[in-house]
Length: 354
Image 1: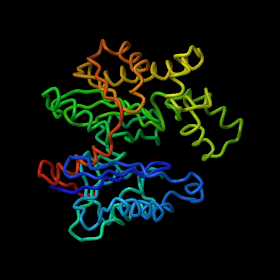
Image 2: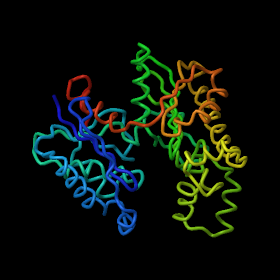
Image 3: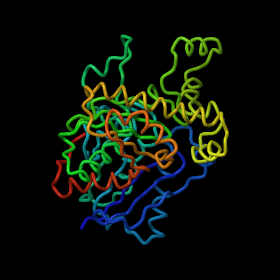
Image 4: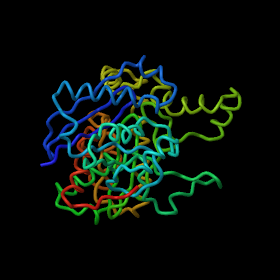
């Protein structure tokens, strides 16, 4: 039996899960006060605070760090990597500390937290299916403008796990399947999986459907005119596109649970915006179907927004002609991390080197 601690930092929390093999002992989101987060200029500056908070919580739970066999952390937007479970090594740590990553994101802290929590040389430390999982065919990298390349940044951890879960439950082989997997969350990822490889996916910060906070694909000439007319700086533009765009820009609210309630109470504007978001998700699914030449075994929808049947029904109605649609509400990234570590510890997969 392996004692496993999984670590998944969020914007204002650090979620941890303590497992014995695949049996959950507890999972907890340790909240950080927003004022405390705001005082740090850079994400990396939060490291010591988050490590100490986790240590204090584990002490309350009477968990001795020396007793943990495996630390497994969420992988951030590192350099492009194949899907798999990677050992946390000096190169990975150095890349994060030096900023040699594709984006400044709180998930980059996870491997550093695992490294700081480890107290014995024989304790294993892994990441699993990082944000930067890249299995693109070369043709998928072409953007339409020389010098700008499409990048594979997505909710790979959850989407890979759910795809494998579907395959297991339906007695299929993930590595012989053609799937479209959709993650509906703060950002939205729509991905095409062919024979175990995620060969295309929209980068939720750059393109694809709009989401609660992100704009997705925009009319580029209108966007250019807006930016130049307001003489906006890069950071201002980035904030507009990735945290103040999408649903929030229309409704000044990105809480989908609250908005669905308003929609069901008859708010026509809310209904239009949420329906448009799911309309765009459906269009992106159609696009991914062409990536797979129309040979799609199943469309799988997951993520927190998938709890809202009134929204997923829109996707089902628009895309069921392509393939059966299956809904797996929620995102269990902690379990995905644990299962990835276990596959290596039990010899089912090989540990990969960063």
